Image 1: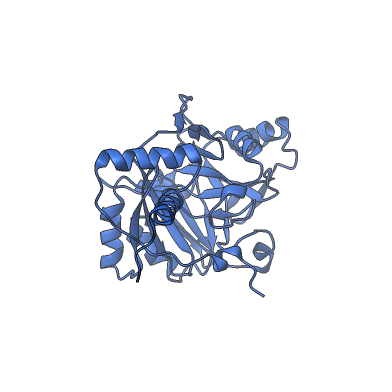
Image 2: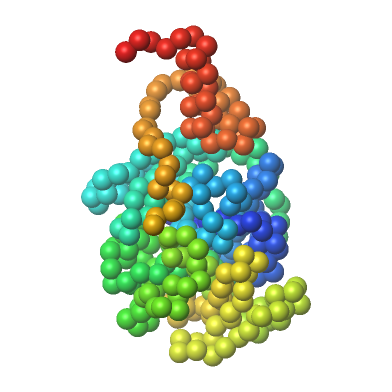
Length: 254
Length: 58
């Protein structure tokens, strides 16, 4: 089994505040760098990594989010990508394991990690996160464009096709997180630093009003639940000043 | 104007070699201790070795 896990990376100048924000949502820390600058958080489905922006070797700006994944065997995944026609797949060693890098259909570098060494890291024995809380990074691009088949090559499956503007892909049926593809609107383009056009969103089976109340009580006072075209959505500004949304569990997962 | 720092990174090429597993492990752990990427540590180590011992004449 070489199931891929959705694990976007948020580059941040406010790592501790972002960790506290995500813990308020319900995520839990799992692996922390003893030197600081890296925290892996787990949700009930999928993960999220926080990376100190100042030590980013790609020059990422604080508040920038990029798609990322974790998999047990990067070489097997590399073979699948090569078979699908991806021509710049490289696998190399990093201090913590192995890395697969290649260019996605939109010209961004995709990184998939496989950790096999915890030296210099601390595993946190935290309570399990809520099973119904799942990570859903949303990439802004034509949802009918090439990113969809690319995600399917990675091992995700299309589960929700709400309208022409949004398609949702699941990793292991959502147990390893989701990736959304969303049409680009002018309002969406104003808010995000970096080139990857990704925002952090989540789905949960917890009542959104309860999540919003918890956020407000922890100082995230602009958290609000609104009824939209596709159900209720909680919106809140995270410590990096970026918009974050929490949606109800998608229909295919309910 | 494209001022994205990622477009100004120096070109790198992959360099595969065979090494004893224990040396690989020690090198990886040294990179962790120094807060460096594995590539950056190996680049620095090789550069320092070549400086100390004299580079081969092309």
